Length: 298
Image (cartoon, rainbow, N blue to C red; front, side, top):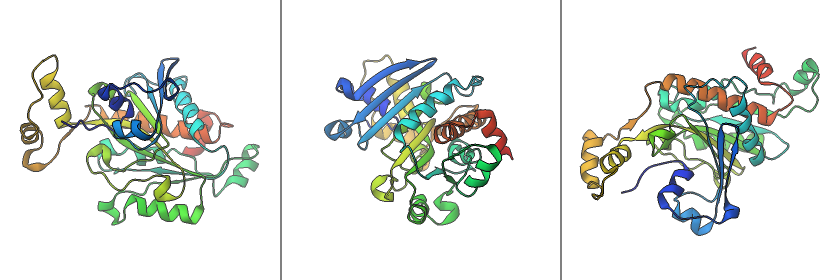
């Protein structure tokens, strides 16, 4: 049976194949465990992922821990900075549907991203900071509300603004419940909007947009069929239940189901702050997190 997950690290664990040491590195940074993977050629095919770099940051549950000293967001910001060009305009896109809480990470994040493209010189004058990086931010909404694919919106913006990179934020699906709200994945391989909630849309990546795409995601759901299969076979030597049986149990009337934490509102709120402030810090490290909060609020 195919287990749906957007996390490259979970695919690595499921396949059980070892990557070459230079393509798989793990290190501890404070309370965060950071895994860097590079998938190329046959490795990418085995793990069912596009070729590229994947960074997985495992941290304490976002909904249970307040990042008081900003340790976690600084870790995410540092890894994000490694994937970005050093200079030039960056377009930040918050993907997803604000009306569906587990899918609202992108739009909620965009609310706290400091857009500077239109006010760079004025902001430099007010703050006394030179050479602010230009940043544009957009929440393209979803096809059902706009009649436009996210790819179409972003492709038009990239053609008009010619950014050096696009940062795309979206909710992800995990295989394990233990990953929900405890993991941040970064990748330069792009992203397929809606994959986390079972509504996969056209891939957004360098080839399709014409600009590098850095994906930032937090798993907020587990596919019900995947969860049921794991629970039914946990600690058992019996074979997996027949896929058709699981389909009937977990997708009544053909409607696929997902499982999300009870505290999903709090998870999305704190994950959005973590993502937004990590992006702000990675793009314009001259400001502190408190200064970003004041500037965004203003």
